[in-house]
Image (cartoon, rainbow, N blue to C red):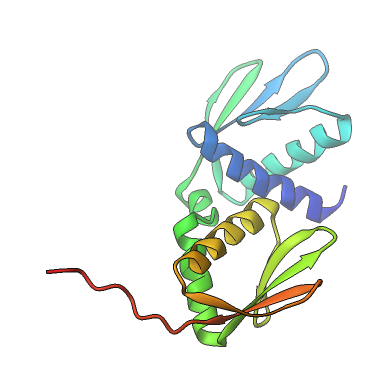
Length: 171
């Protein structure tokens, strides 16, 4: 098994746990052990083993802790450390705004693997869930005119910081 696929599985489990009250389960049946968050990861033996290794990685890093155990099921809860590792929409928006203010521009790259953002040397494409979240946050910045398009090609679109002052409250 590759280390990257195990890390990707661990990150996916963290994001999926947010949809199931920050809980993850390790279940046992006649086939063997498998992991379940909002959905079960049992498609193939390789997938099952990768997600089990991802669960063990989260446990070793202290991002989850066991809260309940029985013969057929072990329940894990995501710790505060694990919750901090998940990027929220607000965090993604703030990170992008800070990066584009510092660098002056942001690139939206169109690749065979999908679109992703790059600002300076920082690439926002490590985990699919994060990549999509950053793209949604970018659309929000574009919609609220914090960035404006400057050039576009088949491979990449460039956007500049619009130097927009924050909205002031009406008195």
